[in-house]
Length: 369
Image (cartoon, rainbow, N blue to C red; front, side, top):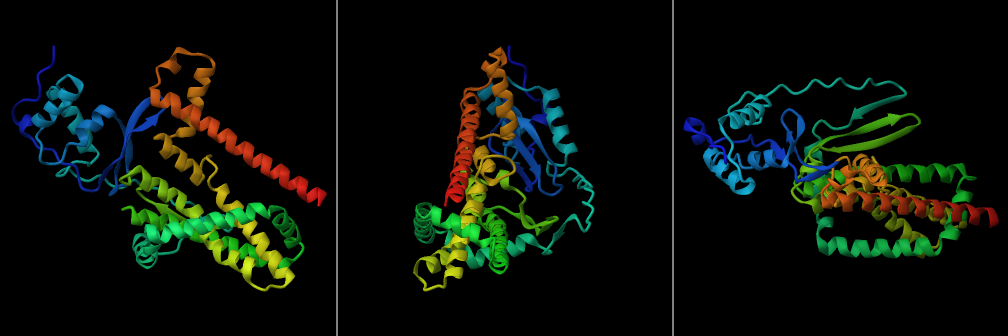
């Protein structure tokens, strides 16, 4: 028998989430399906189940508890009583997610100690405003009429790189015997990584996201730029999240296009031609290495979005261990998880096998050249 719904003043109450509250799409989390909720004001985030999300997503200030309860009963076949509603509303109110409730204090996050050997340094006071300015200047490149020809040029460039990979490998070997050209190439590759990070922010901004911080991070001897997209997991559509993740690698390859044109068509001396050859190969490797589907690389973010999962690597590992033991618990995973987790594991193995094969082939070519 269905329990009675909310009654009295509670039934008439029209709960409303704060505008700063973000809700994610459904995501696999092990055997469960969850939604992420984030309060962008405090930075707090947490997971809820599908039923809780069904209720929370309808708290728009227009629908009453009674109306939301009717929708819930139609979806799940049961009504929530006053005690259930009070529990949900108390939880949301305590977290400051409901309009009219006190906003929680942002968590105090201890700053990472900055030393000569390791640390971070923000470069701009307002990263989101900086990204907005960059988007105004370069956003036209994200339109189809600009991006499609650029992608065609990238494919043509990479075809040339693959076709002449033997020549480029020898150029890389020679590059390490010339300190001046090696330093210049290293600087260009570092600049490419900086643009890689900014590209994530610009594309996220194009898709409605926000950038929290742009800065430098160092773990000596490595110094890199970083760009933190604050609400990446909450961008409106999955294709927006994938586009944001892949933007960095595409930027790395776009960066190489003018150098490729010089390499192919400009009259260059032998040393400069070899340096450009090495740059093209190393830059291409840099770009595609970021697409390997292992955390924390961009390829892992893309794989997670394709699978519709959070904590994909851990969840896939947990499922495969159960499946290999033929545990009954593996059969309890939803069908989508039983497809996504093995597909991710198989795809990762194939990508890593291709990487190993390429490295072995490259080494063999250098040793026999």
